[in-house]
Length: 269
Image 1 (tube, rainbow, N blue to C red):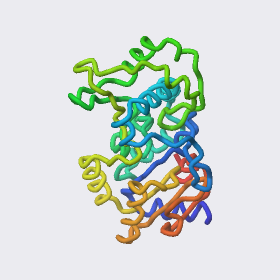
Image 2: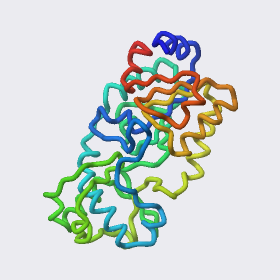
Image 3: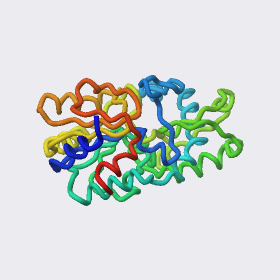
């Protein structure tokens, strides 16, 4: 498929709904979960139920997160994030739904962003609902577990770092400052559900869109793939830009096997 054909389709109508995945943040130094075949290449994630039920799993999560958080915190929007802001400002977009939890779209200056799977920069207490900035919690975690300062590991898009199991067993978990309850990151874990208000917001955004543009996502998770099914059902054009295979390849009107950065060339920004 020629680039000119993609440009013609995308410029032929306004109000595209953009869905982004981990591929858009690689330029910012945050790696992806999957390879170009859509296969999972990292350690199995902790599920929602495991986090709730097992203190050992919570210790594993917070130890790995404490090591991985600094990289997420210092990540900055890429040229592609910024290009999407320009495209939004030119009136081409109805809005943006991201599967990422890094908040880089917001840092780049986007106005209409829905964090489909939550946000890493905030934690909430499961007992009293009190919220705390992840950066503040990091200081408390390190203050209680000084040994973590010298630990490094390969980091995943959600800030989960690969470290030795014996390190995760040593951590002293930090509790809610308000009620001493269990803290959980404000993200949707595997096996968890996207909040009702988020689903309602994405449904409104989809209803206002005239087409679907997916950037840097394999769409292997149903919460994002379903928008492609809806678009196909509603005869809205679907454009995929991803370096590898996606779950919606057969539904797409156009598929570009390219890095997300090509969007700058597509929209001439």
